[in-house]
Every structure is written in structure tokens, then in C-alpha cells.
Amino acid sequence: MKNTIVIDHPLVQHKLTQLRKRETPSASFRSLMSEISLLVGYEVTRDLPLAFKNIDTPLASVDAPVLGGEKVALISIMRAGQGILDGMLELLPSAVVGHIGLYRDPHTFVAVEYFFKVPARLAERDCIIVDPLLATGHSAVAAVDRLKEKQPRSIRFMCLLAAPEGIEYLHRYHPDVSVYTASVDDRLDERGFILPGLGDAGDRLYGTV
Figure 1 (cartoon, rainbow, N blue to C red):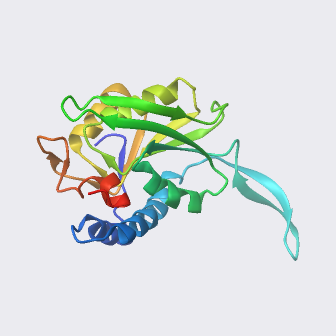
Figure 2 (figure 1 turned 90 degrees about the vertical axis):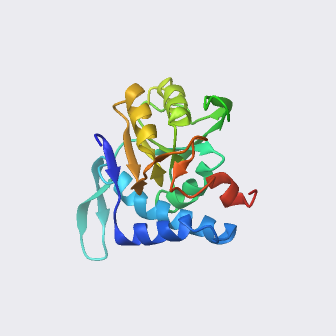
């Protein structure tokens, strides 16, 4: 799929299988999601801009690469996005963080916003929206719509599982937003859940099944 990057590293795929299992308890589910997010995050951030800064090693001075421009902004779609956010902050501890609270109407699948708080002055920042699942795509489109009001330098969408329908819906409205995922699954069921999927990520993260 165009503008969709699937991270098929063996460690990512192995941990994703453990995440999918029905019997995986919440504590293990949280740890696995953080670990996978850290691994996927390497690919999401692969082409961030670099600058050079003069530093002193114990033996010499050298112009060494550092991240260029402002810090990356991580934007979590609550509540399940928090599971990915934890892993990404291990990778990018100096990133600034925003939150978008959305829930999906169970009948229409329309995303309803209940919270929005993002860092100021996003124009010079690369934003990474994080949400474990890209299912119908309604929440993703709603999040990108709101974030684009702040005119960030770039937006990427990071998830662990995506449905073809969700990718198509997101790119129908925002073809410029790259999707990074560990798997593109088969399809959505009649309730808008990804098949084979992993269930409701928020419920499994926090034991509210």
C-alpha cells in the first residue's frame, strides 16, 4: 500500500504474536506493547533531520551528528495510545508530548473528541501520532485534522496493527501522512474491529475487559 511502511523485523513479529494471544495478561501486554513500540520507533524516526555539533571526545574534537531542529512531538490518541507512548519516550526521552482524547461511537464509528492538548509552536516539529490500532480510520483522520490546525512540519502515524480499510480511509483525506505499522491485517468485522487483530487495545492494556 502506498505510503505505508510495514516493520517486519523478526523480533517485532515475535513480540506481536505474544501481544495477540488471548491469554496474555495485562501486565505482560503493557510490557510487550512498550517493547514493540521501541523497536518500531527506530524505523519511524529513521529519516529525522540531522545537524552537526562540535564535541570533545576523550581524544579529539569532532563534528558529530545530532538531531536537527526542534524536538520531536509525540501525540498520543487516548487512552490506548499511552501504551505506545511509553516505549517511544524510552527512545526519545526529550520529546514533547501531546494528547488527543477520542472515542468511537459504537454505531456510526464517528470519532468524538473529548480532550485536546498539544505542545505550542509545532511549526518546526515533526509530529508522530501514536495509537495501537488503525481500524476504521475515523479516529486517525480526526486526530490528523486537529493536528494540522497547528501546522506541524510533518505528521506520521504509528500503530501496531492496521486494517486495509483504515489505511484507505486515512489516505483518502490525508495522503501525505505516512503510516508505520507492524502488520496490515485481513479486514474489519461488522463492529469495526480488526481481524485477526488483538481485541480492544485499551481494555487489554488496563485490564478493563
